[in-house]
Image 1: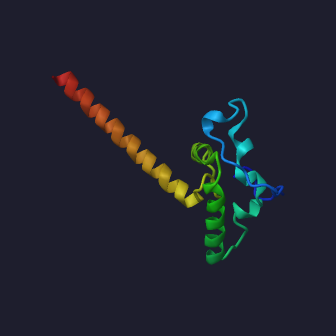
Image 2: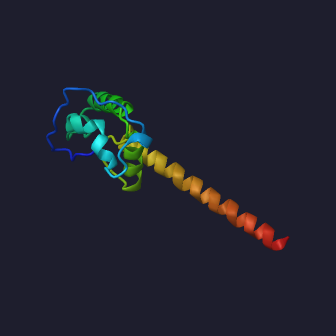
Image 3: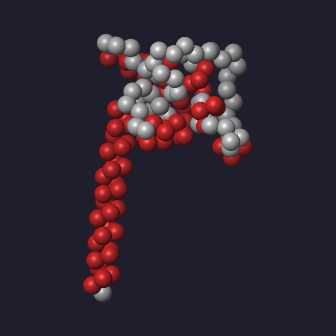
Length: 125
């Protein structure tokens, strides 16, 4: 999702078509092709004091929009690298992004440990 929570967005009259990444204009920013640019921002960001059932329903609807987006992967990586603390980005909620980031940190630590151990073995051998 590209817009802040209180932005008004245009609603598209024609559904977006998927464009393979290799066929996109490489000079244009990835977010120019985001499907969410044509949907209501409220779908991607929680209103204050939203009931759990309403939140889950809204997030699932937002994820359905993300699922048909040609730049979902780019959006997800943007949200993970920033990191974006709110909203649905790249088909993931804020809580899901925290899980992905925690897994990446654990994986990186394990890779560093493995590389360190391999370096010690090579130095000893």
